[in-house]
Image (tube, rainbow, N blue to C red):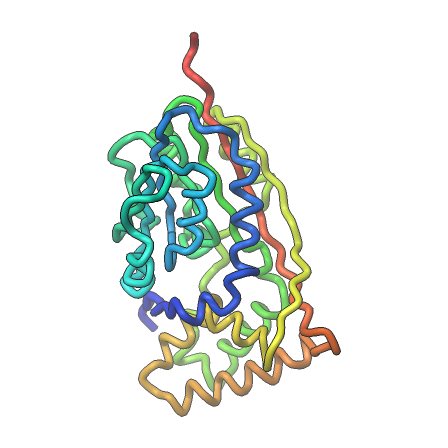
Length: 274
């Protein structure tokens, strides 16, 4: 089965926007002050632009560009483009993180829940950090929950005899995320000062089958894309996956608990010698 890029649904992705936004807020709160005024910032894998907009709250006068390879996401993000109240600018451009090359220096290169879709993304770090201004920062957060039931059940279902021929590629897509200590080693080896940590958010989701609805916005996208031409098969697959999730994540009187591990890295380039 040929590799097929997933089709994204901004509305589905934003259904749990509060939970998806919190890790980015936690990330940018720990980013040190940027060396240039106004700073230039790149957001890699900006998605629908709602979290890119949050950068304007921390750096109101910044010139910020969000990059994404999904036309659907970029179309949604354009609603935020333009001048910002603090005197900065916000724009969005098409680019694939696997090949994105900075054409000038940035004070901050940031990425929120995107690099796990990019096999070998750590190999891009030398190029990206070379294009940080002295004192600039590379900062990102990625999911670290690929051994959670939401993912293992999905991989097993995709690999079941009924679905293997059509969904073998989504099932076998390797998790591209390294452990925090591996990111620490890679970026320290490039001469950066690194702060790496992990957090497990105990998310309380509400509504009918909320974990299924969550995964429809992210982990399920490759399978949904592969089955897009066969609505009956898609619905049957979703029903089977839903039933598995109901057992793995039973509802409580207060909602459905969905633990979510995330990894964070902030790597700062040294200032120029005095």
